[in-house]
Length: 367
Ligand SMILES: *[C@@H]1O[C@H](CO)[C@@H](O)[C@H](O)[C@H]1NC(C)=O
Ligand SMILES: *[C@@H]1O[C@H](CO)[C@@H](O)[C@H](O)[C@H]1NC(C)=O
Picture (tube, rainbow, N blue to C red):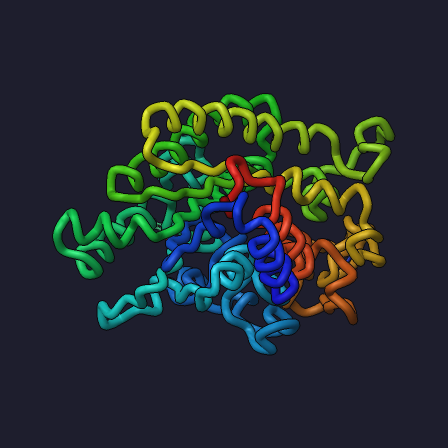
């Protein structure tokens, strides 16, 4: 991070005349999402009596203790906070006295979905949900918080003008639950417009509430994830991408979602020209290291999880990371995948850099 600021300040000094404005600074961040950005809400929600993410090896690399983050260390949201010189965001559910920190709050909950539980109930897979705290619940939390951080419309507008809103990643679980319940790619493609609509609806709602700068990330290349590779193996060699060993059909599905999301955001930009709506290309940023792992220090490969209970991708549903029969690798920084589903701190660090210094956020996050 120091290097990053050094480079920025050098650039700024030498091109001071050209770059008339310094990189956009934000005074607070509000984050919505799922386990890719949850910094503790799931554990605090008490949805599960003994969640493994509440103990080591989760958190071992950076925090040296579990924080409720689904990784060995920091997440993308943590690296973004660092880049803007802000403290890490406290989980919303840890705030008990209504005293919200001015630098922002994290509403993300592991297992959360863009769609509400009713949708999954109607598909008869409601019992699979890990949490009922969907995106609309998180938006409700934000509205509640808003009434205690600012009073008048002008007061709120002034505050949120200097805030960065991260709307996701969200939506990945909507598909995960359905795929794990053996939904087909064809069936799931039909759900994409509904999921995308839920994400853009929340983005609009936040703009109506005063948000000016928003980042809306797409889905990761799920065909490269150990859980998908394990649960959906194929005897056909041609189902795997020769360049990286990922499942082509699932990556194509993630791109299908991302392309629809990008189109919807374009429509939103026309509707709200005063807002800066940034698409964050998690897929493209992650593909960099799936294609050239060693360049990024991923010497132990990209597809095999660091922490797991055996199998070709070290993902074993009967011995998932943190459960009896699983163990973590010696050096998570040489792995992309942490527990079969989530990525390592090292992978999240590379994705954040790709978003912050470009070119994987459109328009750029720091301009
Ligand atoms: C979600 O809500 C339903 C209905 O109120 C409830 O039965 C279920 O236990 C809840 N699920 C979780 C994970 O809290
Ligand atoms: C998966 O975990 C179970 C329970 O620990 C174990 O019996 C089984 O051998 C493991 N499978 C693989 C492929 O390692």
